[in-house]
Each structure stands twice: as structure tokens, then as C-alpha cells.
Image (cartoon, rainbow, N blue to C red; front, top):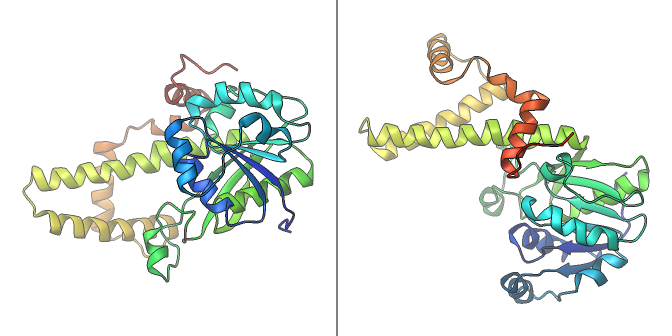
Length: 286
């Protein structure tokens, strides 16, 4: 059952890119929200949005859940400052698993660690309005799922996290619960290392087709966008079988582009290596 309770929520980094998205959604709820921002530019954005700023110590002192909407590279310093000031029983929620999995966050035995991340609207989502079509990132009009991890066995803590996640990423269809390690395996390995890389590779292939092979860009873009939808629908949903000729071309592509040992990226040591690079660390301590 989805909780309908109201919570005291503090947003740290409320004037940043993710902080503004989170705050834009929270302001539509009945939760009691405090907005914290250190940078002058972020403070101005927060005020321009009609939101009142609160100093960090006051905001976290009585918050049920503190949302750390700050970049990964800042989380170590920010949690070191603010987690000791949180009340016992509160929840520290970060929005990306990298720093949490890498052990960079300040912990307290009486503060619950949680991580959440949006799935973004599915390419297979049935959209019916222009606003839904325009919302490719999510959190505005197009429904999306979200992933969350909570290091607590208390149902009330999980309910608080789910209610907060549904608020900050609204509209949300489902919230899927995993471990922090599993969330790190999803993001970055599955979706950034693989899916986002392939998206960038598609654009490189488009530019090569246009600039090297001389195909008109409109024609190349049209056939690529249409076939990308078909490829994903066939590959991920099994909508239609690929033709025999297509399968041969796919084998050629795999042989020419993909390394034979590519699945090593799903090993724990490779995950550590990937996260260390993302967080600008020499290595991940275990």
C-alpha cells in the first residue's frame, strides 16, 4: 500500500539541475519542504521559482528525510557535514548509487541510508498528449518507474522513501526496490555503460553515414530513427522476428564492433573500476 502520510523533507542542492527538478515536484505536494542551496546562482534560481531558502542546519535538524540532490563528486563532503546534524531515525536519500556503493558517504547507525534513481519514461510508454511526448527525461508529464534501495528492514522507512520517490519523480508508475549494489549494477553498468554508449554510437554512425558516405542527412536520420524503434521492439519485446538477411548483418556488426569479452563489465571488479573512474578515485576500497 502506498503511504499517504506527510513528511518533513529537506532538499540539499535545491537550486541545482536535479535539485530544481525535485523541488518543482515537491512544491506540488502537501509535504513540509525546506530548500537548501549554497551557491549564489542556485539561490537565485530557487528564489526566482518562488521558494524560500532555509539554512542547512535548520533544514536537516527535524527532517524525516533529507534528499541530497548534489553531484556525486560533492556528496562525500556534503554528507560529512550534514549527516551528523540529522535527527536519529531520519533517512539520508541520495539520487545516484555511485558514491553510496563506493563507501564515500558519511554514515550513522541511527540514520537510514537510501538511494533512488529515476528510470525515465520508457520508449514503449503509451503517450497521449504533446506534453508527454516532449517529456523524454521524466518528472514532468510522462509517467516513469523508479528504482530505490533502503538499508532498513522497517516497513515505515521503506514507505517514507517510496512516498518521497513518488513525489520527486512524479508521475511514477512503480517503485522497484533493490539493494544499493544492484542499483549500482543497473546505473551505471546496464544503462550508462551499455545503453547510453550505444545511443552515442548510433549518433556517431549517423554522422559517419552523412559525412563520409555522403547520404543526405534527412534520409539517413529518418531510416535510423525508424529502424532503431523496430530494432528495440524486436530485440527487447520480441514484437517481430528479424529477417534472415538482417541476422547475418547483425552477426557482422557484432564481429566488427563488439569485443568477445564484453560481458566482463558485469563483474564486481569491473564495476569498481568503472565507478572509480566516474568518481575520480584511484580505486574503490572494499
